[in-house]
Amino acid sequence: MDKEQILTVPGRYDQIQVICKFVSAGALEAGLNKDDVFHVELCCDEATTNIIEHAYGAEDLGPITVTYEISEEAFTVTLQDDGRPFVPDDVPEPKLPKIGSTSQGEALDDILNSLQIGGLGIHFMRQLMDEVYFSFNGARGNTLVLVKNLNPEDQE
Amino acid sequence: MTISCQQVTGEVWLISSQGRLDQSLNPQLEQSLTDLLDNGQNRLIVDLSQSNYINSGGLRCLVTAWRQAREQGGDLVLCGLNNRMEEIFSLIGFDRVFTIHSTYEHARRHYYP
Image (cartoon, rainbow over all chains, first blue to last red):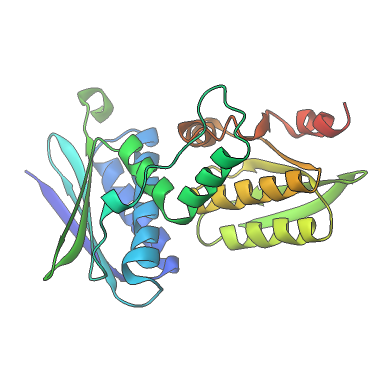
């Protein structure tokens, strides 16, 4: 049977660790290995930071609701806020250093720019999670869904 | 959870983080690095061996300080990354931006071969 837990906190930086602990406990219970738990935690940290910085634009402007669900196939985290619509396609993919590049000059400026607009957090989510969905509707605000598949060998 | 700074050899400063490099500790890291660089101390070693977590904000602090140190003719090198930290750095190509040494002793030799 699926299990679901819900946590609502004010949109403040000091709540990020509360969210991370909540989600990590669920990820461990779901049977994810320690590396995967860390990946989930990092992605929730980045997602929460983006909500405060970009959807709300500052601290204490609205709540963040975090839900996790454990099913046989996956560990799914959903983050919701009441902030401005967040369109991930508007955030360019960070231009990260290529193998063999010297990472100087213009390429480095691109990295710094992407770090400042939250592009790196989205990059982490897309790299470290199996599925990432963004959606927005007027009634519920932004919804971000992060999915980590449960591999049978992880559940021992 | 803290950031400590000490002058180790000649003009070289060691910055050690202890704890998670997240929103609660990153401002302290940023302040420590900025204070050193504003005083012209630009030969820096950042020891991450007591941290097993870093988010994009922490990475932003490090790369900003790295660039400032290089602009001043100095450098910022890293040491003591555990496997988890190495994974994050390589995921975004930062293992090719920074000079990363396994231990503090190796990092010190970067400045005093």
